[in-house]
Length: 176
Image 1 (cartoon, rainbow, N blue to C red):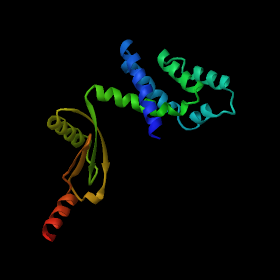
Image 2 (cartoon, rainbow, N blue to C red):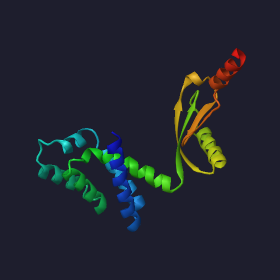
Image 3 (tube, rainbow, N blue to C red):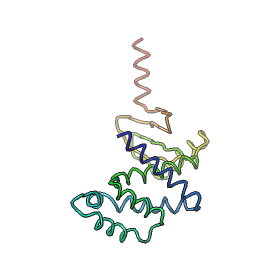
Image 4 (cartoon, helix red, strand yellow):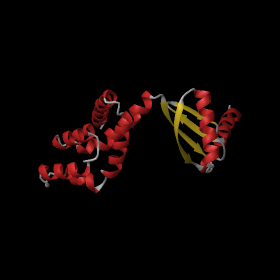
């Protein structure tokens, strides 16, 4: 599976280079996002189905993507022709990751013991951005076993300030 991931990254990198030269990086990103949502499940399986003639699959894909940028349509056509259309969702994700990485945006996961309000989320992200010096695209999760506090994963850094972690540390100190 690592091979398909690296293939997806190579396609995404090539598309990014084209987008940069055409000053269409954001346009390509929006197009990939729309198509990622549209070309999922049954539609992707139909495009992969060798029982449907390639000509028919290509005609359907061309009709569905007529309003998309030429580079995106060409990529989809190439993937279809090479029987690699199944890589498209990974390519779309890799492209977004590449654009964010080049823009200095890092992904973060914030896990709290209970649901927090949108205002609290925004404030927490702002504090993390100030302390890290980076723009953070955060996703939030709830894990009641934390008891209180939060676990923050930003890039490869983990900050565990949960009550559970503090109690575990106290237990280790008392046991030694």
